[in-house]
Length: 270
Image 1 (cartoon, helix red, strand yellow):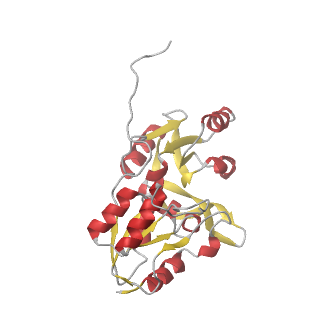
Image 2 (tube, helix red, strand yellow):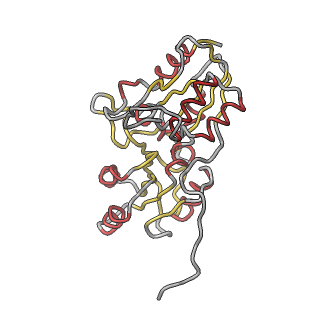
Image 3 (cartoon, one colour):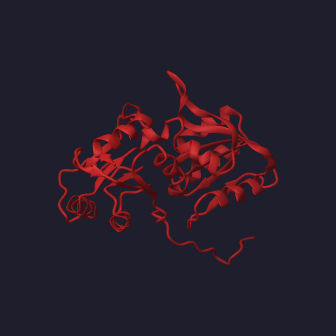
């Protein structure tokens, strides 16, 4: 038991807001710092279904990875989904707090949790470390317990991540051997060149676009695995929950990935 301010102090010891990108919106979104917090729900997205889950759980605080108002707003009127969410939370006495890019670069942070979920072992090092702190930064590089094919690693990664309609898709020879792996939770387009320079066998991330991925593979790789954005960040929730002491925590298992259905056409070209 404690106040919201005390819970935030614990969170920010692990995820300092000063480490967030300048464009980001992290920290307390709504809530009274003096209010009592007994139960905390962790989720990737601040959306209506998560708010309902928080109310069912009796949560006093929701901690999300993604910000509610990343680009700011001039109104919280209940005429929009985000406005209605704010009204629901304030009316129910539920606070909302966000740890986003400051959680991405933390040690351990989003990519550490992703690396462990897909089976990487041993010491992890940042894919793109900070100049002033080589143990923090974007992404992680680690090793598999033993070499395996790209096809087998893709299947292993899929088994370690929560199921989504998106699933996992890979680029590269399915029979190629992989051992050294780079991962980055969330959108990883910007790290393609960094992954190549690191000399890894495969880079697992999310939101890879056609042209950058195609050009990357045409110029020698390494192999790519593209997962659902939400799925690559969900493993962090349990890690974040473990940083809190004196409160009851729950990790949301509600799938809030934007994509909800997948179908494969029967037509084969050629």
